[in-house]
Image (cartoon, rainbow, N blue to C red):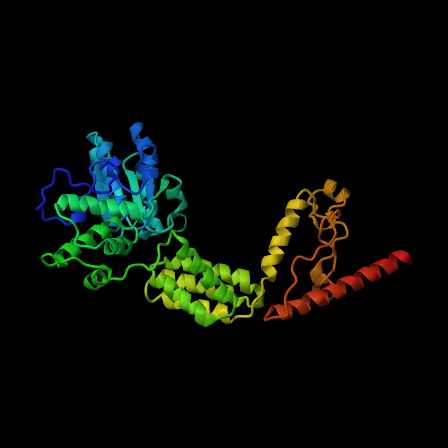
Length: 444
């Protein structure tokens, strides 16, 4: 089938290579699960029509076809394919690869240099690619599972197009199993429900679903058929509890967020663990915890955001399972913190006011006057330097002259916001007193 990730045409059934390797596609059109890249109007398909290929960065989870596609691009553009892994390679390996590419170029042969886990190279190593990319010595194709915007140098990114590889959906994984059965000449010994569980176990990874299929064939006895429970026992693996693209994903993250907002650390921990157990991306959860900190705790406890960011960084450093404990700590901290959405509401109100009054200029007295003309126009006139005033507070008006003063942020009396409430009240009293003195001076 043209839209399958792996094909075994022309390969012997008894080949000793693993099933995922035997079923690699031979043409770009055979790649499954990435129609936006390899379909009839996909990005890569259009590139190949012009027979020109620039440097690329493939961003996506494991088992989505990044290495396979890189090999096929080299084949279809008549480039020599050379592969490096950033995990096992250093500066010496890069120099050898560049020298070999230069030698090929002199003989008229171009090189597609595929670098797996390219984000693991440090800044200096990433910079070493720039000259050979610019002079055409290599066409670089880097693969990464991490966000290139955070992990790759801006200079490298400016010279390469980033293409996103998506996790394979259930339909694509099911097609891979069908192709595996066709190649093996036998059906998987699975009941229908168990077949669905096997697909879910792969969690969007095409290589994984084929490796699991091989395990099933090895484990099954003569005439034996596995149900869903027996399949999980045999493979010693649990299927994700929900499909991350469906309603359960959104229902559980909503339950986690509202448990934190509702100051229930017990329920919050339960939903956090359910999502982790279901195979949810912990960095997605970390980002949502940061959102909870700024939306529901805010300045009632400024340490909430610190805890959330620290948990995100800790998970990024430790990974699974050690880093999951940091997420649990942040969730419990936020659930037990004083709650306030005052800043969240203030930001929304300020955004609306900014759109409504976006054409108004700031008052001249708070603007700098670097030229005599601007001084003559009144820029900076009457500005009171707050540090030179009593209590380091001048009480002057900073809003545009045509706009009345507005109160967007009203802190609650909970947590640290109770202190902020006292400060704002005190400053408002000083502001009124200053206005009264000014008015009295004008009247006299």
